[in-house]
Amino acid sequence: MTTPQAKVLVIGAGLAGSEAANLLANHGVKVHLVECKRIKALPSQKDNQFAELVCTNSLKSKNPDSGHGLLKYEMEKLGSIILETAYEHEVPAGDALAVDREKFSSAVTEKLFDNSNIEIHHEEVSNPLAFADIYNCQYIIIASGPLTSEPLQNWMTEYISKEDFYFYDAIAPVVDADSLNEEVLYFKDRHKELKEDSSIIADYLNVPLNKEQYLNFIEELVKAEKVPPKSFEKYQFFEACLPVDLMAERGRDTARFSCMKPIGLEQEDGKIPWACVQLRRENLLGDAYNMVGFQTRLTHKEQVRIFRTLPGFEKAEFIHLGSVHRNSFLNSKKLLNSDLSSKEFPNIFFAGQITGVEGYTESSSMGLYAAVQILQKINKKPALQFPITTGIGALINFIMTVPKPVPSSINFGLLPPILLTKDQRKDRKNRKKVKKALASERARAHFDEFIEVNLKELF
Image 1: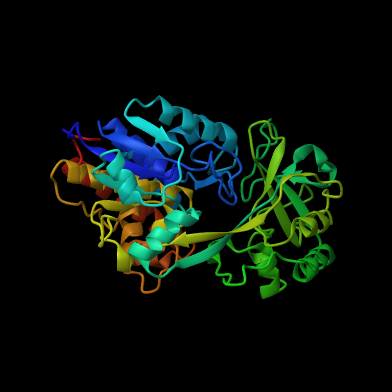
Image 2 (image 1 turned 90 degrees about the vertical axis):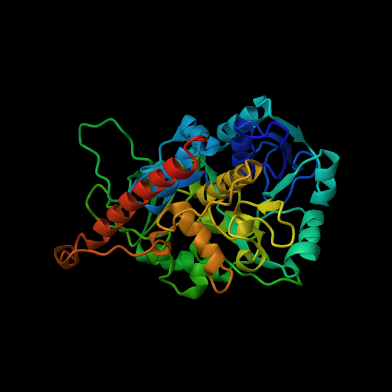
C-alpha cells in the first residue's frame, strides 16, 4: 500500500510527465504537476494543452510483432493514459496509431485536471529542489522534454549534466486537404490491397512523381534557403528523423529510398511512380494532411514555393509549416542510475526524451518507468530491473550502456538476439518476420512474468 503522505513534484506535462503524474496519482500519491507553457510557451509548442504532439500525429505501429507494438503492450499493462486516450481519438492510418492531436491533447489535459490527487501549477521552474520544498515533495520527476526552458536547463547544466548534449529535430508541414488537387493524387496504403467491393478508403493519399519531377524537386531542396543554426550551436540531427532537404543534400536518390520511396504504392494501372510523397490524415474529418517524413529546415517562404511544385500542390495552403528546434538530452549512462534517478540527487528522477530515447511511445514509457521506480521507493522496496528482453527494459539498457549518447527509438536491435532453428534460418524469405514474432512473444511472456512477480499488487 502506497504511503498516503508521499508527495511527488512532476515538472513537465508532456507525454512522459502526464504518464508519470497519472500513474502515481492513481496509486494514492499526491502529485504537484508543473507546466509553464500557458505562461511561457517554448519553441514548437502550438497550444496550451498537455501531452501535445509536437511533430507528427502518429504513435507508430500497432502491429504486435513490431518494436512499437511491443512497447504499446507493455505500456497498456502499466495503465498508460497516453495509449488509453490515443485509442479514444484514433484516426485511420493503416497499422499505425494516429490521433486527432487536438482532441487527444485536450482529453489528456481534462483527465489530469479531474484527478483529485493531482494539483496543477502553471509556473516556470528554475530550481526543482526549491520548488519541491515549497510543496513538501519528497521526490521529483523532471520530464521537461527536449524543449526544456532555459532557467531549468541552466540549473541542470550547473548541478547535474555540466556538459550539454543535444541534437536537432524538425517538424513536418500540415496541408489543408481542400487546397489539394486530388484528381492527380490517389489513395493507397503501402503493400495493403483493398477489396474491389470495399467502400473503405485507404488511409494515405499519395503524390506520384516521375523521374523528371523528382529530380527537379530534389534540386530545388538542395538550392533552397534553410534556417541556419544559432551562431554558438551546430546541427546534430537524429538519423531516423532527418530533414528531407538534408536527405537531398546527401544524394539525389536518398529520399527515394526513404520518405519518398514508391515501393508498394502502385497506381490503378499497376504502374509504380519513380517517387512518391505520402500524406496522412491529421484528423477523422480528413480536412488536413501531414506530409509524412517531410521534416525540414527550409524557411517558410521556401517551403511554400517548393512544395507547390509537387503534383496536386499547385494551390496548396498550409495549416502549419515545418520548423527546426533544438532537442536536449542527458548522458544517462554517466549521470543517472538505472532507475533514472540522478547520481548527484537520488530523489530527482528523469523521464521522457531528456533521458536519451526518441519518439512518443518511448518517451511515454520512460514516464511510466520512473513512476514505478518512485512507487518502489515510497513503499521501501528496491529499484526494479526490467528484463532487457522487454521493450522498456531494452530502452533502459540502451541508454545506460551506449558508448556515446545518441537518442534511440524502440527497435528489435536493442533486444537480445533470437536463436533460430536450422529450418528457420534456411527460410530466408520469412526469417526476419519469424525473428520479430519470436522476439515479441518472448518479450510479452517475460513482461507478464515480471509484472506478476514484482508488481502484482499495483497492476
